[in-house]
Length: 244
Image 1: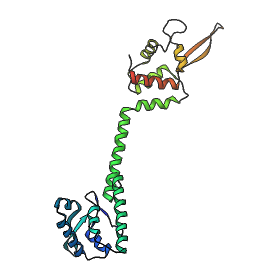
Image 2 (image 1 turned 180 degrees about the vertical axis):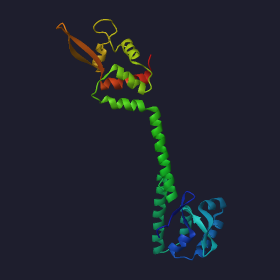
Image 3 (image 1 turned 30 degrees about the vertical axis):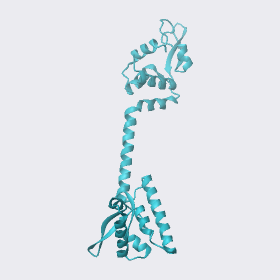
């Protein structure tokens, strides 16, 4: 009773053998009833959609049987009467519903199907990983540095950009940042310092260092460093727009 409905040719079916066993009938009589239904249907094509001839082995010999889908079973079971027969019909309905639900959900029914499904899923995962690696490794890296509290020199930013496929060196990066309004472009003490626009966007921090000279004077050295937010911003920007 555990295998009332099985999978055959990608369809939920039962067999004349199983029906005979379940309802306590002689298999030859079930075969006879099926043949009568096929003859009386008036539509051999429709009947073949419900019933499929096959064979089973018993003690080294082959004997005929039929596979039947839900419609075929329903047509056959109409002639089965009695309280016990009704209970078996209900069990069959539940079995068909369960099997057809599993088919819709793609649940494997056999070990080979389960192994094939696992292999297909593994292949899809690998394809997705490769696609991500091709399309977005730079953006992923940029997202990672967005939360970083470590500031880096502009020369180090140029190295990061090259690691992300952007061909640019330190001098050219300074020039590009000046031309695009991120660093001050006019000659003087503020040369290469962040513009007000950059300050508002929190792309840079300026580190001030006091330098003691031999004549007793003290001067202030200003070093521009790129914030984690700035690293993300510029990597995404140059990936998207390229370097002019």
